[in-house]
Length: 161
Image (tube, rainbow, N blue to C red; front, side, top):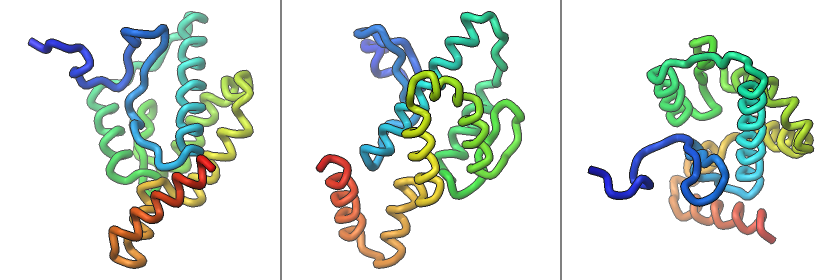
């Protein structure tokens, strides 16, 4: 009953138009550097998973409801709370889960030549907070949405100048 496959909700899929994998779990990045960081992490994750599959290594089966809970937890609390370690099925401080991800994709980041850039951007994000955290901080200081918009404009201009 769905006329267009692009209307189906998905997190990742093979592209219908180009020979690539599309990831949709992080649609919006506030800065160019954040987009570079997410892109590097996703590329390293895809490479790591591909290498495991081609080497015949068994992947860890994660139940869909655990993934849904992890997604909700991350969307709700971001880096300021706990994230769900989907393999261990436990909640852990966000920096610990991020460190586990970096350990997992580290060899791919090195092989792709992205390690220094991506690891630096991840550390900066952990130190400064996510874009959402920074926007809430700006709003918390002045209680003015106009200041948040000004902040967003300044952050965007900084990355493209």
